[in-house]
Length: 154
Image 1 (cartoon, rainbow, N blue to C red):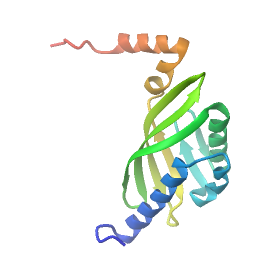
Image 2 (image 1 turned 180 degrees about the vertical axis):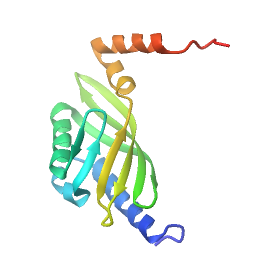
Image 3 (image 1 turned 45 degrees about the vertical axis):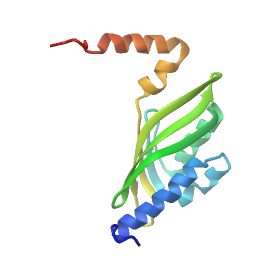
């Protein structure tokens, strides 16, 4: 155990490292291991989903594999505390014959066994996804320009 981390924080750090390894190597086949990382009634929320339970969380990831090509998560930073953690990530995939990258963060809460009980993703769907799509992208970018404050304001 690290001298800087108490026993709970060390457990969280270990659980987080295992979870990150799983995410960075996630495949349709490795989804079968979800019970190692998520509590039975865990909640998962992102801009498109708000589900509870391992089966529902697994369906979110199955849908990801069905609708994107070569999806991969890369964790760029992490911060673990007592039974909670934050990670910053890049999600890369191909869709509509184009490569996409979405940047975001995740707040995780862990139970006493080191399994996730709350997984909350934060990312800007308008900036990271919608603005990059062929037709809707032009509309989102135009709306963004219209709503943006003038740069030369006093």
